[in-house]
Each structure stands twice: as C-alpha cells, then as structure tokens.
Length: 421
Ligand code: IMP
Image 1: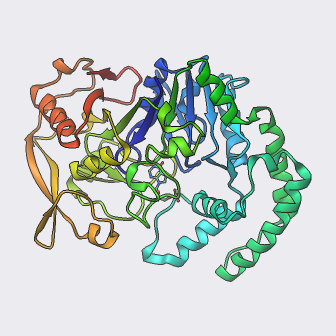
Image 2: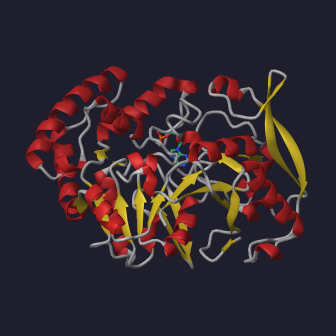
Image 3: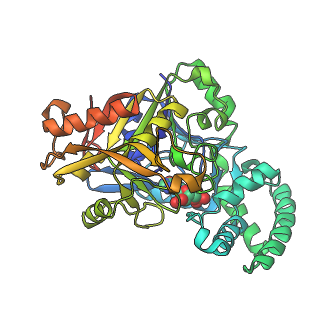
C-alpha cells in the first residue's frame, strides 16, 4: 500500500503527527516538495521534535526516509537538522537518502525573499523568509543549483560565483546587502561534504524498493490552499502541495499510488496573508489563550476560524482524498456551540467552490450551520464510540461535508492521542 498524505487546508493541519502514526504501516517515508518552510511537530512522551526537511518517519527506528527531487534544500539548515537529531540519539546513517537533483536554497534566495516581501508592503505574502519562492523561481528559470552540484566543488564554485554576481546586482537594486562569494562557497561546500554520504539517485532507489513491494508513505508539506496552482494565488507557497506533487516530486508514477489521506483540523487556521473566509476573533482568542496555534517554524500566531467545508470539499476533489484524518478535536472541547461553513455567499449568490480570484475570495462571506458543542475533555478518549455524542455528530458532519471517509481522529499532541475509526 502506497499512501499519499496531504494537508486539506492551509497547512499546519497536524500532518507530522499523522505521518508518525501512519509510518508504523510503512517501510519508507518520502518528502516530495517544499523546503524548510515546513515545520512538522511530533511529540513522543516528554520529547518534542520539530522537523523541517527530514521526513517525520525518521523518528521510528528502522524506517528509511527520502528527501526527493521536488524538495528545495537549504544544505546548512539540513546539516543542522541532521546533527540536532543525532545529538538526541536518532541514527540517520543508511536511513536517510537525499536526491541529487533536488534544488538548493542559497543565501541569496533568503535575501531576495526578504527584500521582495519588504517591497510589497501591505500586499506582502507573509512568507517564512526561508528563500523558498526564489529557489523554486530559479528552478523554473533554469538558473538553479542542485544537490549534485554541491558535491562537485569545482562546478559548484563556478556556478555559485556567477549566481552571486547576478543576485548581488539585484539585491543592490532592491536595497539589500550583497553576499560574499568566498564565505558562501566555504560554508556550503562544508555542508556538502557533510551531506555527501546521504546523496544518491533517489528515483532509481525508490523504483528498486517498489519492485521489492516496500510500502511508501509520501509526506506532503504545507496544505492544499498553499498550492502554487490550486491555492489562493498569490498567497501561496511555490510548490505543488497537492497529491500530484508526490509524483512529480519523486519520480513515482500515479498508478503506483494506492490511496490519498487528507489531514485537516477540526477547525481552520492559516499563517501569512490571504483569504480565510471563516476567520473568527472568538476562535483565535480561545485557541491562543490555550497556548495553541503558534507556528512551528516562525512562532507566528496563526489566524484561526471555524471549519470551512467549502475549502475541504475542494481539497477532496483536487487531491482525490479517500480517507480523512481529523486533528485537534480537543481544541473545541470547551465550546457550547460550534459552526461549520457549508457554502459561501459572494455578491448575494451562494457558491459551493472557492473562487480562483484572491480578491473575490477575500469578499466571500461564510454561510454557517450550527452544531451543539460537547463541553467535555476528549483528550483521554481512544475510541470513536466513547466520544461525546455531539463530538461524534460533529466529526461525521465534517467527513460528510468534505465527501471522504473518516479514518483517523486526533485529540492531542501525543502519539497515543490518536485512534482509527
Ligand atoms: P513560503 O513558503 O515561505 O514562501 O510562504 C508562502 C506562504 O505559505 C506563507 O503564507 C506562509 O506562511 C505559508 N507557509 C509556508 N510553509 C508553511 C507551513 O509549513 N505551514 C503553514 N503555512 C506555511
């Protein structure tokens, strides 16, 4: 069974935790897109791990993890992540594979990301400033450097020199500080030496594993509405965060995929700018007061709102979601009444799909259906039938309105606080 896991909302759906749980039934976990803009949190006992580039599967002994061709890799950040895990006793040798064709995120990408955001002023995207957009931009413009360049020092230095010259000129125009070629060269070649043992042709390796009937879990990063094609453009990230990205980002063809699992919170959150029709000051205040909904990568407070079934229905369609994992149910435990957005109203018309124009999307008003809350803690519950009846009803409604099977429910951050339905 090969499974694609995607975020059905705006990212931060709790994918890290669900991946960790699903990894039990997989041999290999693969990241296929995004970069260290992602932050996947897994809590095991008293230990908390936040992974940015390495698949969360690394936390389960014996599982192999792949950072595939569709990911953009900041080599210095990746070395930091590897060393951080090793210090905590996680062994990576012979368990982590890095694609030689993945593109690199270099310091000028981060600098450009920052300068472009500054220039946009109030129209900013609210990026993580990790250089993700400019790195994918270079990939599409065919001016990117790849992992295989990093371990060919001569080629790397030649290409890097010309890229830094060009980007320093752009940075100067934008008002940013120029980069020092010798310093970047030294730091990145050193990172390249540390990464070298993990670098390989992951396409060939993955196909070898498929022949051996190994089970692969494709770990999506970010969420459907941050997808470069299907998200709320331009308030999106720069990769295909939807199910198709698992094929183009790894070289594994569509007919080898068996199911798509969509992860979504029992409510909605978003970091960064852009439309969020169900945003609610009440829901934000409640969750933030509980100490929840602060970004794992940037620490920013997330914008929060009611569950948006218009959005998740669209996510089901573009991803082909079969099974749903609903997380953070416990976040709603104290509420007397809960709302679900079942349609939008735009200029007096009821619409069932999110509009493609971000401006129109911004002006959609949610049409809500009200549900009774359960006002009981769910965090110790491990069986669907043991949940308060109102919580069961609420979860069933989320699945029905989204149009997929409810399979996993999560009621807390811990690995154990998850059950299958
Ligand atoms: P970028 O990916 O850093 O370019 O940011 C573009 C948009 O995607 C911003 O709104 C970010 O907040 C958002 N974003 C990027 N990565 C994540 C993530 O892992 N979770 C949630 N939002 C993200």
